[in-house]
Length: 592
Ligand code: C2E
Ligand code: MG
Ligand code: MG
View 1 (cartoon, rainbow, N blue to C red):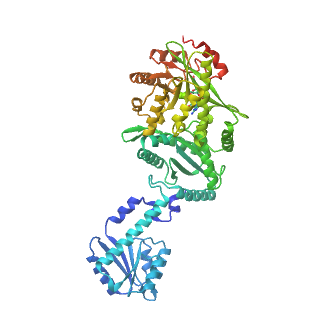
View 2 (view 1 turned 120 degrees about the vertical axis):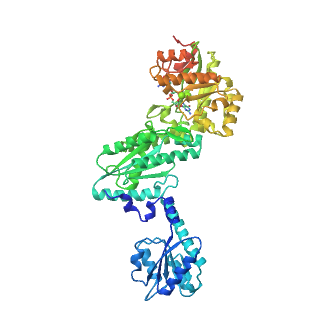
View 3 (view 1 turned 120 degrees about the horizontal axis):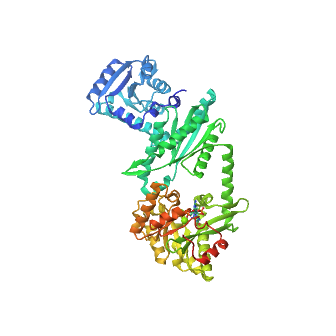
């Protein structure tokens, strides 16, 4: 396979990272080629350059037009001084020919006398400057050369930045598209396969929001370096922006080749990243589209790889998916879902299920967690994981969340009015809801409207919310607390938490994420983590609820460790109000 970069690169500088290029120019003497009509002029110029302060110059001269072009084509000089008069021809003709032959170094035209029209013509033709021989002194010549070189360097830097990502040094979107077109043309000529991979970091936003953009940038740099070091020279790695990377794999024999690379990329990106003394773990989701089966032109291939990446995200992240026609079906389903989601509220398609949280020592139902369900007219009952991310993306979560809050409060009030044992209702909040300016007012109004006493409402927040260490979220939490509402941390242990927030915020309950519960007591690691979390919370006088308790062994383990309450299929799945009411009526669940 041809070395792809060589083919695509128009300017030699594109291959050189900018800093290397600068270093190259700063070291050593400035190499000057003078093409002149007269030998005396060459002597004068040499004299002037030797007098110049600051830079050292190495002058080579050529008399007349003949042979000049061949020397210029060697591209070894930093700057060219071209006499306007070169016998029958002119320095401007030489300048144009040099540019046509790929000359990148700056050129300065020397004229015998001041002539405004030659001056203008020279600049138009691409000269860096034009100087009048009789008026040149050492300082003027040195400065003209230095400016010409510096300007050229700035231009090249701009050209570089226009094609490369400044943060990672990878190809940027513009260059990526150019390289993809070239790669596709080559694949077509050689009847070979090509794989386009889209790689997006999972939950990168959390890192950026919680640890700051500097840390985020470091992570991107490390990931870029890992990708680059894994790939062959002939493969292209690009950063399209944000946390989106692409890889072009040329000349792959089989789909397995692409699979193998995707698996390796998953592994190397997932290695711990140390930034500012902290270890971060990040995983990618990868979408792959194969040429020619699933796209023959750049646009289609890009669209399909992106769609496959989206599917990898939907199916649990930290994985790869190939684009197939079936993905396409999924994507249009996604669009349809989004449209029907927008109308679901007014069509009253949402309902709440409730799952009890039971106190360990008494078996009493201390809370009911409200869990959202969507009764889709064609697709039946849809679980929250399948539409809440979408609702968060498009902002629908705000009105939906308000509906959940009102309905849950109403339901709890209804139970109380019916004389059932008092219990708290737990409502899940999305960060987006919490960030609303008037969120506290909305909660207060709903409590008043429904007549529910605030002590019977518990809001479940996720850790990520606490990273926004801005004053707004702190004061908002305190205001909620002042209303008398309980606050719990949901899915504890799954975010990037520094834990320090636990002592700064008024938190009542920690809910240990079910991923730590599922494998206890068999998994030593999870057992240790769960025990540690319980001890940690108790040290801070915070209650602990374990989520996702499915077995008696788990219950017993948690009981021994002093866990305050449990929730999970072992006691009850989430149920409709009609199904759950009799259980609440008893108020009590068998724990032995
Ligand atoms: P969550 O808040 O952590 O809710 C607990 C989830 O665990 C529920 O899933 C519940 O059905 C499930 N679960 C309970 N016991 C067990 C068990 O023993 N084993 C297993 N494997 N799972 C168990 P669900 O109802 O599908 O909700 C998923 C997530 O969707 C919730 O996780 C919550 O983050 C979100 N969610 C649900 N309702 C709402 C809502 O009204 N607003 C917002 N913003 N998010 C919601
Ligand atoms: Mg919850
Ligand atoms: Mg949870």
